[in-house]
Length: 256
Image 1 (cartoon, rainbow, N blue to C red):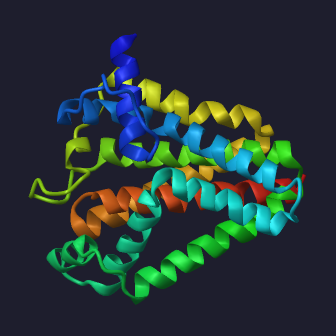
Image 2 (cartoon, helix red, strand yellow):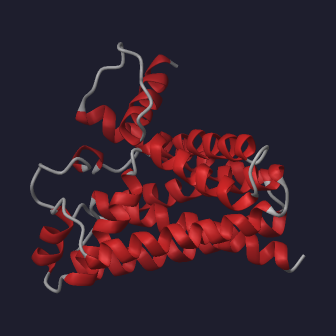
Image 3 (cartoon, one colour):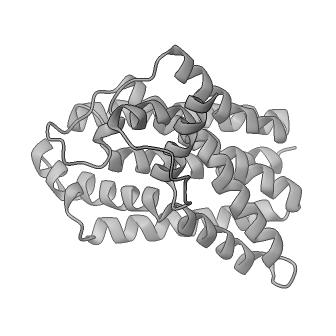
């Protein structure tokens, strides 16, 4: 139990800005094994965003309350996944050869593709969440929890199925580039899927199918363009599938 707790805190410290106990030691091996709790970190981020929305909605209309919820999630993760999405847009949009794409994604500066991609992603999430908020605070919170957990399971799935694209060890995500064992896969899958029990059955199935299709498409594209994944591509996949979950929920609720 203590070893699993250490893995959870390692994942929490790696994928968020939340403090972790001092007795949790860091090692590349532990970081790789801690990926099993990546979806569980999504529970915390989703719950924090839902709480921020609930508090803001007491005094504000839905639209600004949604913006506050998005800001809470970004602050909690240090914009880790948004940064990956922007870098992936820059690299895949502006680069041609594999080496060029990888070099662009590693550049800390943001370009036109990254700026536009990030702006459109945030606008799309905000617009979708404003519509979801009309279903009520409980449904809105359930959607956030499910989307944040399932989208992180999608990123974890890429680490299982694809090789790591970079040959150097300088990347921050390099310690994660090890497949999980069967137990780790089971824990990640359970943590990623369980929050779907909070939403209606049809919406849950739609979100699950959408996430699976987007993850499969992303994996094929990344493999063709770069021969594998990078940390930025994991963040991009999380952002893409999170939005996909929101759209699936909204589409399903509009037809029920």
